[in-house]
Length: 515
View (cartoon, helix red, strand yellow):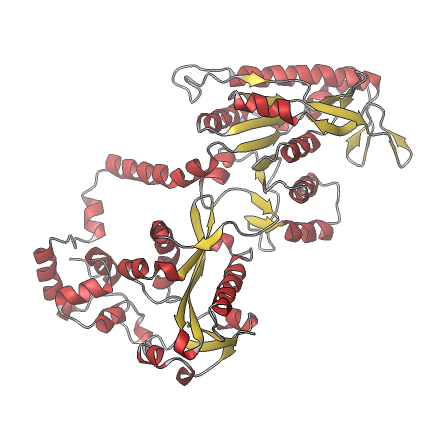
């Protein structure tokens, strides 16, 4: 049998179930999960308990074979199959969340020229097959610059905007036609033995963008460089309802029949705003935002993104121009904007269908769908808290305990995944409540989810007439102190909680007055 206490506890269905099966006090089982310096056994089953566990396992038909032994008996093929099944199942919440949603995706002209573009097209086809409504907006910068060079023509650029004279406009039209045709051709592939097999994608383009001239700025006449005046949202919606992928080029048309050269990023933002798209995705030339220790910043609020933008001195750096566009889109009402390095093969799918993601998500709020937990959230809560229990940050909660107490929990959910949880246990006779099981997934800790859920639980406690809130913590005293909790004594807790206080964990007691 395995001597891993956590494994044995899980096989028996929790601490209480194991204690009952081997006729032991649950407190004894709890001590098996604690580190030795905290009075526990370091996560190991004591030798003296082995016989009882083996007998109980045989009696209850419970498998207590060590995972390592099972692994050794597993063939490489079956291991690979299990990994695939686990991955495939883990994408299901995202697939459900994204189906029927509308994404506007901006593709640079550089991306179209890259050898990875074929893989990117396959990713678009996959999104389409999953029921996601797509609008693709492409750029033409390198293609236009190549045509200018081949025709020995110069082009002026001010403040990252090209001055488009008549000759440049004609070359922009040529570049646009070539790029659009090549993209449509790639989306039309349906060869066997390729990811596009049987795709049968229908692509539509058209005069969806009404434009106007940019005019004269700081003394520079931009001539046929324009900006978006209006988006034909109704026509776009009609095409999306017909299950077509919409392909938009960086040209706009005026009511007088003139053509203007536009920034593709601006068009993407204008469309996403006009049709109230669920996501605006900017596929960029490099990883956009890194923290001070050079780690990718997974998520930012619009306000946090603005702080980063304001601190940057090179306002014309492509990375920060994309960030500026993302902030503008967010302020105009687009719920989520993703900045994804298009050079990461599969980066789009990683960002949309995995918890760790691959880019930076920007949104007005740092959280989504904070709500009371339901029994369907049990699995997500367990995935969130088990690693913290193993590190000693939280006390162990068996699955049956979570099921019984689920009405005390609130969670924050994003794309079908539980990212944050907390529970409120009330002691009305003492006008006090316990804030327990506060957990935030590591990927989302640079936001404000924990604080938001704390505020929600405090408001709930106030509504129920409680005057104080307490927490028991071993390693998070400073965080709670920053939120207004003050050190207290065990005797300040309700008598019932004092009796159940875990002397082995020796958690600090902190209390906050609710005004």
